[in-house]
Image (cartoon, rainbow, N blue to C red; front, side, top):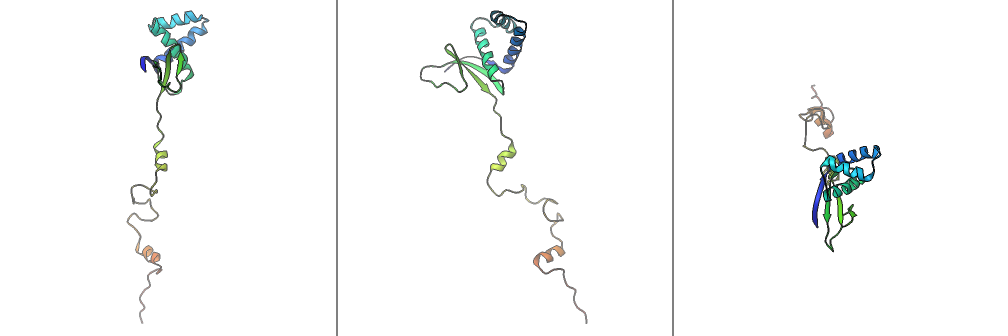
Length: 151
């Protein structure tokens, strides 16, 4: 694989806008190509690569990072989404989007539940300092503490 050139997303977006404006004026394809060459200061092969990269960018605008122009040797695998024009391959490269962190935590195994251990007021207990003596007695099943009998 031999990289010939690349075009950044910003340049491609500007090129698509310029091309659309020239088409809206009713220009012929040769005049559009010449207008793009003048606007972006490309000529010769670089202009030809840019025009073809604009076509690829128009088809793959979501999360596009850049378009690589490359030639492949015999026996090399063609990258996915690559478009072959003449003998060159135009490969769109995309921004990688990460999944939200919350989704990654849900997929994790383990105990689950809250993180960070005990925190005041967040657990089932009414007090951040633990159970009151009455609550402890009720939990043990003794009920309320009985008063001593006096006879």
